[in-house]
Amino acid sequence: MSTAGAATPLPDDAPFEGHLPGSAGYRRIAVALFLAGVVTFALLYSTQPILPLLSSEFGLDAGTAALSVSVATAGLGVALLVAGPMSEILGRTPLMHASLFAASLVSLAGALAPGWSVLLGLRLVEGIVLAGLPAVAMAYLAEEVHPSATARAAGLYIGGTAIGGMSGRLVTGAIAEVAGWRAALLGIGLVGLACAVAVRVLLPASRGFTPAPASTRHLLATARAILRDPAYWCLFAIGGTAMGAFVGVFNAMSYRFMAPPYDYSVGVVGLVFLTYAVGSVSSTYAGRAASRFGQRTVAPICAVVMLAGLLGTWFEPIVVVAVFLTVMTAGFFALHGVASGWVAARAARGSAAKGQASSGYLFTYYAGSSVFGALAGHAWESGGWDAVVLLCAGLVGLALLLTLALRRIPALP
Image (cartoon, rainbow, N blue to C red; front, side, top):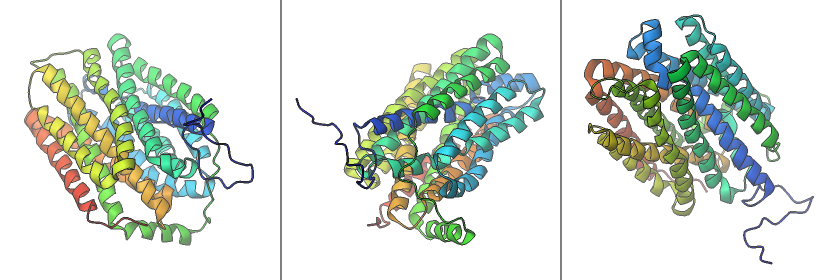
C-alpha cells in the first residue's frame, strides 16, 4: 500500500521540529485554530450588521453607532501589547483558552445591557479579554507546525477569521431580523462558547514553546529588535491600512443598503457578509502561493486585487456591487494572511520574540479598524458612498506602496 503523503512518526527521543501536514497533531491544530479564528471575528464584529438598529434604538448617528465596533477593536489592540509579552512567559495555550471563554461570556452580558453606555463598556471589555487569542495564534503556529507548513497553516487560521466574520454577521443579522439586537448578541455568545469548548478539546498542548526570562530587560531587548527592523514597520502599517479600509467599507455598507435606492431590511443586509466565505479560500491559496513564490511576490498582487474590488463598489446595481465586494474581500484576506504569516516567519528567523512581533502587527491592525472604521461612518454622513470609497481607496493604495517597499528590504537568513 502506498504511504505517499503520510506523516512519518518520529522516535520518542527525536527533537520536536513541528507537526507535519498529514499528522494527527497538524489536523487538530488546523481545526482548532480555524474554529478559534471563527469565534474571534464573530464576537469582535457582532454589532456591525445591527448598527442601524442600534442607531434607531438609542438615537445615534452612523459614526456614533460604529463606536460599538471601534471600542472593541481599540480595547483588543491595546490589550495585545500586554498579551503578547505575557505569552512569552506564561505560555500560549492557557491564554488562548481563557480569552475565548471570557469573551463569549461578555457577549452574553451585552445582550442584557440596559443602555448605550453600558453596552459600549461591555464591548470595550470584550475586546480586551479577546486579545489573548489573536496575540499568540501566529506565534503558536510558528512553534508547533513544521516550518515547511507554517504559511499553509497560517492561511487556514486566517480562513477561519473570514468564516467567523461571515457567520457572526449572518447570525446576528438573521436573529436581529426576527427577535431584535439583544437576542442577536445572545445567540452569537452561545456560538462563541461552543467554539471555545471545541478549541479546548482539540488544540494540542505546546511542545515547541520555550519560556522567556521574566525580566523587563529581556522584553525591552526583543522590542528593540522589532523597532529597529523597517520590515516590521511596513508590515504593521499594511495591517492597519488594509483592515481600516475593509472595516470602513462594511460599516458604511449597512447604511448604504438600508437607504434608497435599495431599502433592504437588516436581515437582507446581513447577507452581504456571505462574501466573507471567499476570504477563507483566498487566504489559504495566498499562503500556499507565498510558500512557493515568496511573500514579496504575492503581497502586492493581493493589494491590487483588494483595490480593484473596492473601486468597483462605486457602481450602483446590487449584483455588480456584490461581485466587487467579493473581489475586495478575497484580496483583503489574502493580503492579511500573507502579511501576518510574514511577521511570524521573520520573527522566527531573527532576534525578535514571535509573540511580541505578532502583537505589534495586530495592534496596528485593530487600531486601523477602530480609527478608520469610525471615520468611514462620518464619511458616509458627510459625503455618502463617494466619500467612503475615496477614504478607503487611499488606505489600500498606501498598503500597496508598502508591499512594494518591502521588496527592497533584505530578507533575514
